[in-house]
Image (cartoon, rainbow, N blue to C red):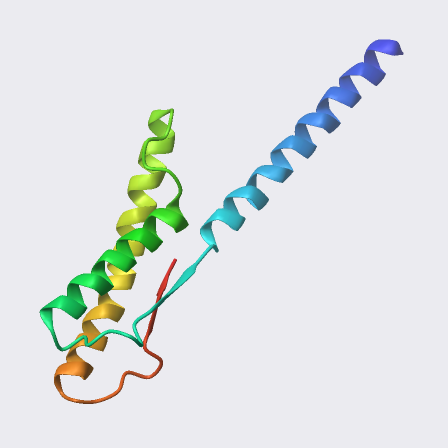
Length: 113
């Protein structure tokens, strides 16, 4: 009977531990940073370069440290940063095109996620 209680306890602990993992992963995937451009002239090369610098900084904030300890950490960062950069740069390119046409972008922000 004592062995049955110990086994049940271990199984319950393992189930609880495994149930908490998706919550942690889900939280990390929903993190985002808003990058403002209201103070930049995105029609100019200097404004575009500064906005790209801000976007790359935001990607590092969203995806975590680049020098992860394990290979999984490094691969996770690489995957996150590639996805975040692709998403952010498509928003950036639309904003630059609108600036070159003299149109205001809808909100002037890029959301990095």
